[in-house]
Image (spheres, rainbow, N blue to C red):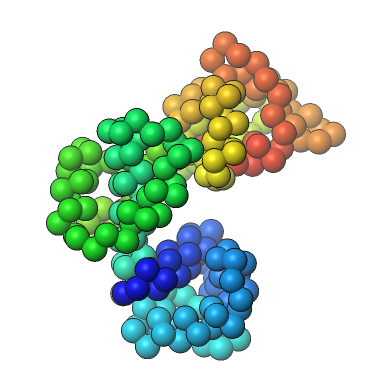
Length: 215
């Protein structure tokens, strides 16, 4: 499989994670910042390899073979992120782009040894689940902070937005995985939140609250 084919599989997998419905070529094109015609050409190639189910104008879904292949790419990406943060002391906002390159390494033996070396983690530094060697995933029940109400308390278990800018913002506010967040006030006007993180009180917008996962 080429790097490009792997990137398409991973993108379809991520879009499928959000929605169970078949994924449109336009959604893939938007996510990958490419033309719909280029997506169609790639989907035909992936369909010939039995990695996707593709019917023109009806969207695309991963076959069982494609789903497992996508999970293995995601597995590599998230294990490398763990390694970079835990062992090489990169910050969580630095690792995504590096892991994008490392995820294409083909050696299954290397990845399994990396998994064991890290103690078989089930989540990456952003709180996303890591598939095991057989593609099994342990899902954690979680909600977005924006869905919480006044006086509720939860623990930060992940982020929806993994962009460097957003992660740097969280670092500045001292919000990290494991942080306890208490809702002091929820404004009816703009759905912004007054929250307490540890001993610190701050106001966050609804956009920020819509990108923090709480358990």
